[in-house]
Image (cartoon, rainbow, N blue to C red; front, side, top):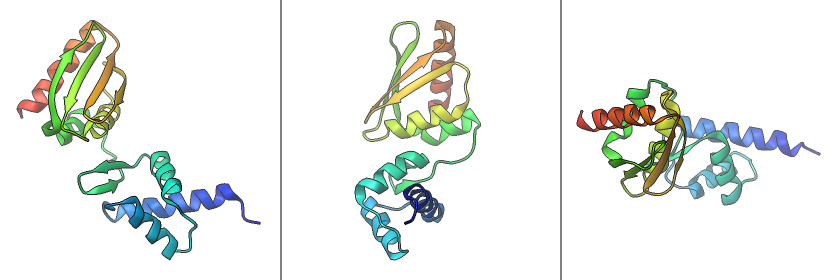
Amino acid sequence: MPNPNTEQEQRRSAIRKLLAGGPVVTQKLLVDELSARGFAATQSSVSRDLRQIGAIKTAQGYALPSSEHDGDKELAKVASLIRSATPAGTHLLVVKTAIGAAQRVALAFDRSGWPEIVGNIGGDDTVFVATASANGQKHLLAKIERSRDQ
């Protein structure tokens, strides 16, 4: 009997290969492509796999995130999606985004490698960004504003 973990890893590898060719519009299309390649897949298993491999949903569909780690470049990719950034207390920023863009912006913050950021949570159109200090919050706010001005 095949090992379920091995099948899962092979399916995830196949998803990575499919996404490496470009965004896939829906999870249903991924299920169909995987089934055509002999993998047992359902929408829920594909959804879990996408989350596990770190895929993101873009305007074009599901995609693998870029591998760049330059914070300014990461934020530049999503700067047009940011509507505002407002301090909330001394260690929190509330970043408003275009509808449906918060997770993409949150991922850009994660990949930025900026030391000011302790962590973040992305919803649908809002990202909460925790900073290590009040000074870090000011620096991060300046970086966000600079990226929006470019």
